[in-house]
Image 1 (cartoon, rainbow, N blue to C red):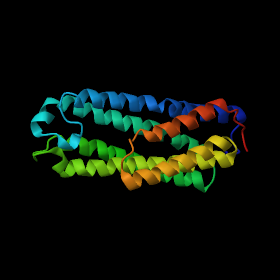
Image 2: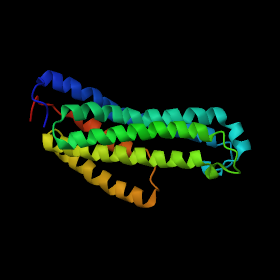
Image 3: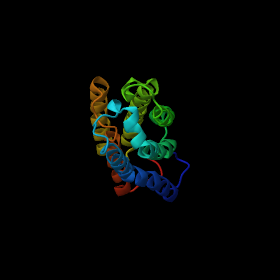
Image 4: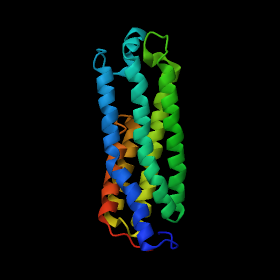
Amino acid sequence: MLLESTTATDTTAAIRRPAWKLALSPLAFVAWLVAVVATMSGTGVSDSADLTPDQMDGIRVGWALMWPVYAIAVLLGLSALYPLNRLLRGRLATASQVFVAVAAVAILANLVLSEVAAGFGEARLGDNAAYEASLVASYASIWAATVATILTAVALRTSGLLRRAGLVVAILAGALLVLDVATRGLPPFMVALFWVVLGVGLLRRRVPSSV
């Protein structure tokens, strides 16, 4: 349910701002993918774990730039979920906030660890402890962000704002989360596809002051 203390106009404005962030969030991931492709294309390897110190020396600037872009992409979506959860009342929104915080901390850890790993001295990057830890942090961030998205989607459904879209997002995100935990094979930008569905859905809805 929505907070009853807000007026219809205030609630509409408060929801449209994060809705736009969610709707545009895939663009940030596109920027990250462009940065990754541009950085890795000249190395001759497709998996960053196979980079050698000499190859890293040739892409150090690109490497240093692409991880902040990744962090920004994730934080953009999280910064939209946070105010939505504050407007939604109940345990689902509160639980979502916890996972939003976990995802934010984890993606910042990924950023720091990825930059530290650039100075590796092992034969290949995949053998570096900081790099391995950065992967764990990345998975933790995306999984926590996905759980937060599921909880917010269900909260939006129960509030009456996104009955159909909220249910669809919750089911699909839940299924893909289980698949990714089992295989670790899905790209991190998958979460942005759920964000854009929620964002577009909210932008198309007429928001009541309370439901």
